[in-house]
Amino acid sequence: MKILGIESSCDDTACAVVEDGADILSNIVSSQEEIHADFGGIVPEVACRKHIENILPVLEKSLEKSNTNLHDIDAVAVTNRPGLIGALLIGVTAAKSISWALDIPLIDVHHLNAHIYGAWMGDVDPDMPALSLVVSGGHTSLYLTQSSLEHEKIGATADDAAGEAFDKVANILQLGFPGGPAIEKAAQNGDPGSLDLPRTWIDADHYNFSFSGLKTAVLYHCLGQNASKSDIKNAEYPPGLVSDVAAAFQEAVVDVLVKKTCIAAERNNVNSVILGGGVAANKLLRNRLSKETRKRGIKLVMAPLSLCRDNAAIVAGLAFHLYLAGRRADLCLEAEPS
Ligand code: KG4
Ligand code: ZN
Image (tube, rainbow, N blue to C red; front, side, top):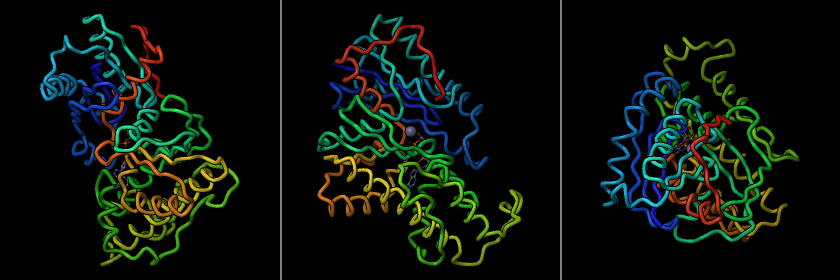
């Protein structure tokens, strides 16, 4: 069964054709990074307008790459929640139009569940029950996972998401957007022990996260307690500061994510830990989580690197299982921001 997936929840316009939930025939992503880089972050109105321009060329390219005619598609799946409302609307409208015109089933997909499903699209499947950590630009959440379709949220960020913190700290360090890959690169030449940053709630008796204090601590360290936005633009940092701060910041985020995930995994007696979302591409996070889960005898299944960031293959992949479970949306399907 061939499913066309559509993803437009944030700043990536993506279409993919996936067969039987596993075989990726095409996975096309049009990124808007360069456009948003000028603003140091995603501008929702700009993202929506770009999705309108991108959606049809990306759709055509994904069909062409997969050697598939639109009439050979068996169902169309779309991310309809959560995300930027105007951005989601473009994908949802495209998917509804295709479903109506071709008279094929329409399947609505939750973006974070699709990130978790990335773990089923690699070489080995996770064993159930599992603990899923989703770390992206908009979310940092822990779920108890019973199957690819059943996730119970047990923790989330109270303020900034991990990816958002990477993006904001990269902005302070003048490293550009998106911040995650830029911080990871700068950190290679830095000393993670060069400054002591907070690890909020690392030993707390709950599974929630908070990264906003960490970001503020970086700001104060770099520019003093009265720093404003214009100070960031005009700052001239001494040699070595950027790489040291990048390394210390990355270390602090990874410490918190890994420790809380391992505590939650042990307490809930799970058989696997799943890692997905854009920040899951971070090598320090992948290596540290591998080491700590191995120590505890817990299987770790990470979304393949190529499927960590937003894409539509994880949407079409998950939709196959939703379809088998009888899930169908109709033309009243709405985009839901949260
Ligand atoms: O999942 P995603 O593509 O979009 C959302 O659903 O938000 O995640 C994007 C986030 C951005 O904040 C980006 O800075 C972060 O993932 N990211 C990384 C890395 N690559 C992307 N963060 C840390 N290390 C990376 N290598
Ligand atoms: Zn995402």
